[in-house]
Amino acid sequence: MWHRLLAGAANVGRDLRPDRLLMHCVICKHGHTKPGKVSVTLERDGSTLVFKSVPAQVCNNCGEQYVDSETTARLLHQAEEAAKAGVEVEVPPYAAA
Image 1: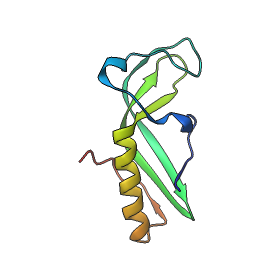
Image 2: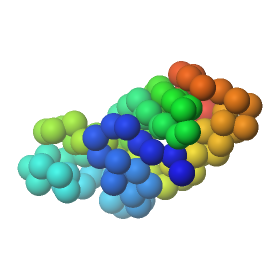
Image 3: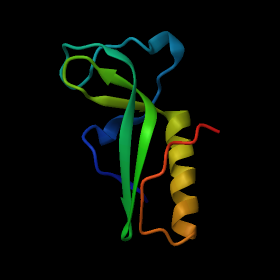
Image 4: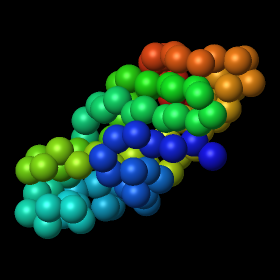
């Protein structure tokens, strides 16, 4: 299993349907989220992947990051492909499709 190395690991895969895009931050309870781009670091069995420019919702108060389930599935697929190729450290851009 891949482990996320950034704060907010519990927020990977959250349901961020369009009707819920502006939401209260569940961490700080004061901010609201807005669309942004973040870096996501995943680690497993000696492999470390840092995906840059990942679309996410980001709290305007504390910076907490929320990555939706579709994006999470793509990240995990890309991470699996990198692991199969024997990658130990890689910093690829996020590929949306």
